[in-house]
Length: 174
Image 1 (cartoon, rainbow, N blue to C red):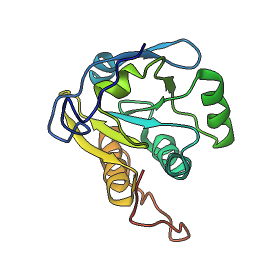
Image 2: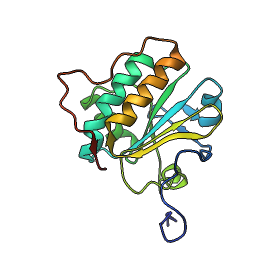
Image 3: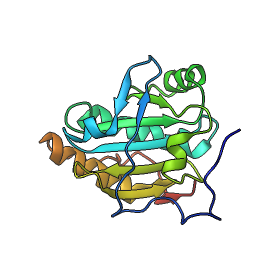
């Protein structure tokens, strides 16, 4: 039986300014990803999602855009899936995503560490281990800020994340 976090026994989702709980998860191919190790190189965007979530489906192509421009070097992006590896792989294929996909496993241990109640939930975790951005849903402002920080970390020119042809709201709740 799973023991789930609830609002009855703690505050809400982890907020900016607090220490990010450490974790290690295997990606869909079985390769382990350790937050502590990744933070030695630079920031990590932990993006929690569920494949059936329409706001996740809307948000993740923009996260992929950040990854294609600035990720994979010092800055890491991890999709933390609340689905099994097979379904997660299908989701990644459907939305043409290439950043690592890490299934959270039975009972969602990492989602519970971060007090996830809705998806998508995004946490930008700085090399000092503190969360600098914490957001649930699609937030144009926060995704822009994440892209700018990843550009600075990768020492690349910051390109506007959203093209004029992109029709996006300022915010969509998760």
